[in-house]
Image (cartoon, rainbow, N blue to C red; front, top):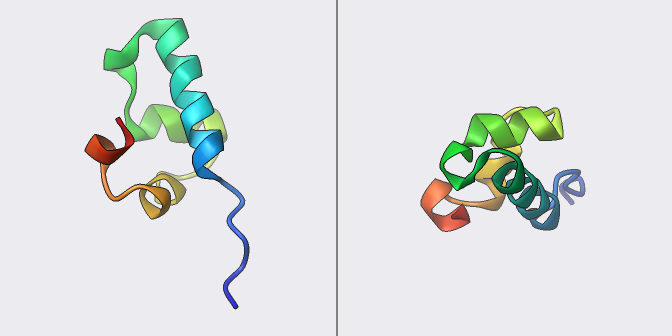
Length: 55
C-alpha cells in the first residue's frame, strides 16, 4: 500500500486562493504553489495532471 499523500488537493486549492488574493491569478504557477507549501512541484502534478486541470 502506498504512503498517504501529505499534500492534498484541498491544500493545493487553498494555496491557489491565497496566492490569487495576494498577487492575482496570473501569478499562480506550480513553483509559486510549491514554494508556499514548502515542497517540490511533484505533489502538485501527482494530484493534477497539468496546470490547466488545476486552474
